[in-house]
Length: 256
Ligand code: CAA
Image 1: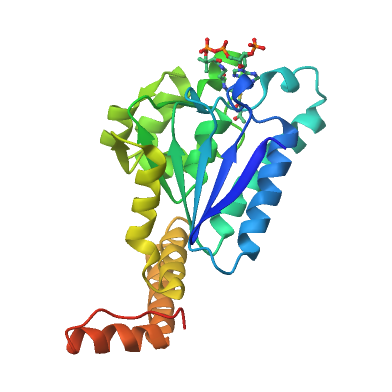
Image 2 (image 1 turned 180 degrees about the horizontal axis):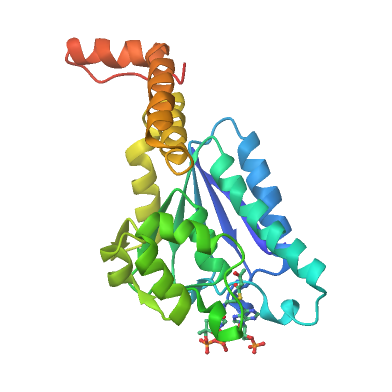
């Protein structure tokens, strides 16, 4: 197995473990990532997912270039669809995911990080969508998720030049939420714990409302927000949260 799934308290950790190939995404690894995400979706006791890569050089160097060669067009299209489907599972998870980018995040590796809810980077992290240098373009969601995150002009420049983006620039342009100086895993767990203590239904409604913003005209998005905020209002956790405010105590959310 080139993908490891473990638990640290209420946090699931998915680690790509193919350091000899800089955690490149063979089709087998993609399938394994898909089943690991399915396993996480079935865990009722986890409140966040961290995604990272084994070794000290790479988060993930992208699609396995050696596997990409000499394929039929249909096989190539199915491969892109597989990567897109696997990464889309992160959006569909009821819990948020955090990519811990510990080195190179190129091509499909950058696209895996982009599919996570949040991204933290070590100071050594380097992002890039270098497909153009191979005569290709991103195929696992990069052309869609990068402009949504950092804007069309910046995204097109990164995609059309294939240039590298270091950790400092990644933070400045909003590609990552933060750059971490110390231990990335510790920082990732601490980052996740900043939201995991809140009501899971409320967290899920918030993610869902924001995700819909990309798909809907403003008026419809506002209707979705009104509906989801009313659903949140109907939870016992909302009752508890507002009561705790009035009683000047910490709320005890029960995900109800
Ligand atoms: N696919 C397959 N093998 C890869 C790989 C990849 N994407 N990236 C690295 N490797 C392998 C290398 O072939 C090498 O294996 P060998 O020792 O057997 O030769 C090993 O990992 C170590 O790599 P390097 O010796 O190249 O390490 P480096 O430190 O000199 O360079 C690097 C690191 C700059 C990341 C360089 O490996 C590199 O440029 N990799 C390719 C990055 C890339 O182009 N990614 C995009 C792929 S296409 C894609 O992802 C399409 C999509 O949208 C899904």
